[in-house]
Length: 33
Image (tube, rainbow, N blue to C red):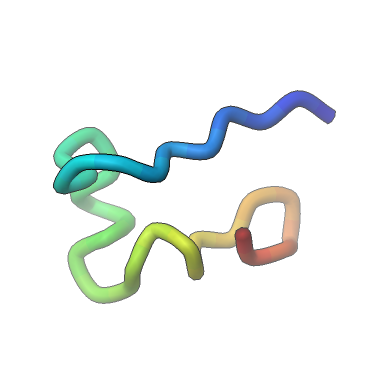
């Protein structure tokens, strides 16, 4: 599996997902980063 970890910035591109939880807790493939 190839993954790009977005670790810098304000996460505007992930805003619907990161409105209530931080980026590190987003689940990808059933696992949190």
